[in-house]
Image (cartoon, rainbow, N blue to C red):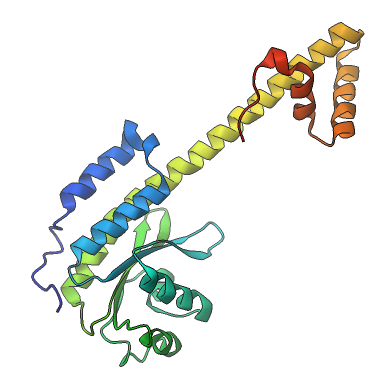
Length: 248
């Protein structure tokens, strides 16, 4: 039965979402990853919509491809995989139109007929899905599945839309932080490589009496001889001076 008594303006887990939002925007952000945020969203969505039997999140990557990055079980992954393979379904429609979609009974649904026929054998009967949208665009969608027909009603749909709007902020923040972290690591690697090369050039200039350009040419020759980069050749040459190599 649909949880029509729910009030979408006052989600039962607003407190938990607010707490996580505060963590995501504060000093504890470094402890969060996109995966952990998605797991939390799936867990809270499943509790918020009482009739949920399967919950998942689809993210859109920078190339516009879709991926079920978090799912509560095989029912979700199988249903989502069929959407991606067939190129149709309520989640894809929610992403394309940035609008919620609901199926009361896949056995009677006339939209997305191939997908509905394909998932009927798995026992799936009802679906409600909503996009996660911020001012930066559509990041993905939350979808909730049930094996009973008419498990979700209009109030469940509005509740999920409200939940998805709030969850979208968490996803956007987590992805932005992760991108910044990757950039930061690359930047630190670049600086370390530059410092290694400078140190190695100075070593060659002092040891062999070379000019700066000649020392750099010597480094490149060493790199070519060992099939590595100039920075790797520099690290091999001055490793004991520069300290232990970075991990990864």
